[in-house]
Image (cartoon, rainbow, N blue to C red; front, side, top):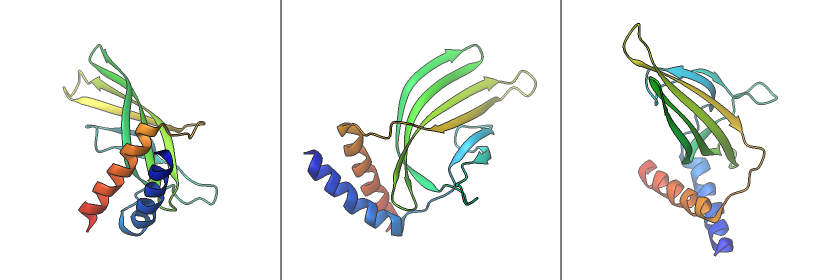
Length: 136
């Protein structure tokens, strides 16, 4: 089963690198909602931005806090050169007493362990396939 999934992953990645959009990956961000962040992006050694598209999101921890929430998630990005990168992402929302709207912060780090569980591999293959269908 794993061999078949890995073969299918290679196939969809080959298609995806020529079809999908790969924006810069945010490292540190802030914003007024969870989708639109401003901030700093990951840079590679040559000074260019690390670019990728999110192919799997898994929330690992969630806690309601006074006036907001805190969460830790595992995110997998397909990079423009066809690599899969696993990140740990920390997000926090804080309710602002001054303007009465929540503010969001994001901090993303590249995971040291880049291994994939079978369920993650299956979900990534499926998600990339869906993205490819929408890109056509």
